[in-house]
Image (cartoon, rainbow, N blue to C red):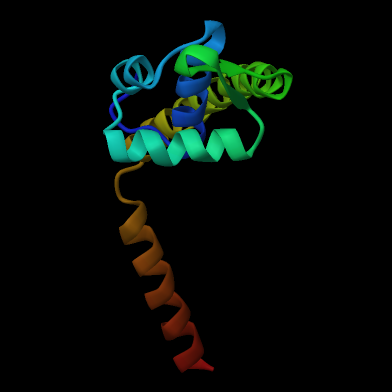
Length: 121
């Protein structure tokens, strides 16, 4: 798990832990959540119908929870792919900027030249 997770990632982490049934303590430790956050997220996923609370105090995935996990996995793969493309484009931009280091001066000179042209009119 990454250092900072968004809300969807935390929900997906909880659901993947509860896939085969899990108690609160197991979910809390494996998802790296405080007890307060765990309770908040468990209420959220329960209210959304993603998990159900069954006998022996275990949380298990519902069909809707399984669908969420499947869709989240596809989303994560696409997001990582797009993030990789974005990073490569930014790198290429940096390379181009380093090849033409005086672009800020060029803009400044153009503005100055435009003002001189306007004064001559």
